[in-house]
Image (cartoon, rainbow, N blue to C red; front, side, top):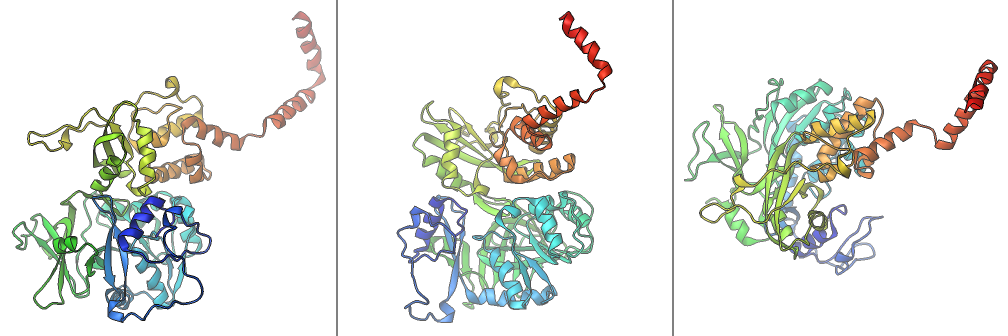
Length: 521
């Protein structure tokens, strides 16, 4: 369980897993919502030994009903992966790895165990460092990291920092759609690195397909293939009738392998997604991803077939956001959608309030108490009713875009040079026509990924470090500008003392003139 997640979510995960005890890391405050779990003490435990074939672990994915979906996986697929992966990518004990995966995100197992089984060096950045791409890029350089696993979004932000990474020799992308433009941008800061696009899901532990990128293929927004199945796995693209799709034909991506997860704790979900073939060993998992075969048999992904989206490498069920909104007593109806913004894919939610007493700010606070940061909508729009199609379903195409926001604080325009610079960066990142001096970044569509882009651009424009924490502490144009300008100025009394000293040091020939002026007054 990641202690950074909302306590209500942690409690839901513990309940869904049927947890029987809680082991807390040193220095972590256990939330009250988990107090029902016993805390074993002493060294070791009295439990009976579990046979190896029954040992395993649970990982959580987003659930459309608001409850997490625990995925049950055995240790054999992970052990097989750790035996195959280093050889496939020429990893050695001389490499230096970075642990960038979230603590409750299943790629953690790859990032942590790969260097450990090799006896290689593993560097772990602080939590705040991961949220600050410019500092993270410098950290990767200073620690001479040679192997790194990145989501395309994080790679884009690191590349934007412009920090050269000469020691980086291997970059493995995964978790979301990778484009040739992403590859080209990152190649500029890591020209010696070999780049690989990998594919796998929580239900198909770790890497199940891989594509060696080779030379960057231009800077287009076209997707990079995820390639072919690896280590005995097959990537199938099947049509609605279950038959293999033709080259270029859209279908659902199905992973066929002997090393899949065992299923969900929810047996109904397991039956929907997993299937075992006649040999009783080989399994198939329906990913819900759409894809196409290329002429060489490789696969290119093309979005999702259900209500699931990828946000910064995390899978988010839109139904989970809707369920969280409907749990508020002041909400009558709700719907969530994914939208493309300049800063990358973002979430937008719509709610129909029970009365005028329900405000968007209140609902946003309610969502923060139950959803992790990556699942929070960038926009929350209140509507008198949801638009419907003739057959009574929500007409998502008719949902309105955010209205032009009224300027805050009487429409104050950015006044100083720093205010105008900040407002201009916000407009570019968020794609807004206008930003006033008093508007709150997080109330006009800002989110953590956009914050990182703002930080990188301000750092480059000002020629000095802008800590990302300052963007959270001073969320309006005016407050942030005052803070940044204040850092360059001396304190008020000291400035006044300097002005007095400067006047006293002026040539005496000016003083009679000043006296005559005072007499006239």
